[in-house]
Image 1 (tube, rainbow, N blue to C red):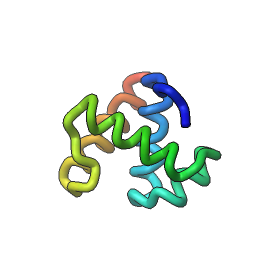
Image 2: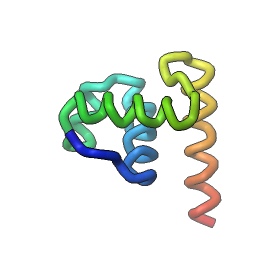
Image 3: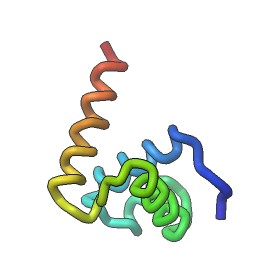
Length: 75
């Protein structure tokens, strides 16, 4: 298991997890990491932000913020 993923790895992991309908197996496969690695990254994100990604409303808010961030970078 990795020591501490960088911010970009956490964001990519959370984004892929949300784009995979919050399915750990599919997201881990897309990221080419073990499911436990993804679970660790998600737990780390939740610990750092206080966001519970298992709550639909929270997951939507995080997804929206990530999408907004992407569009701001693209312009």
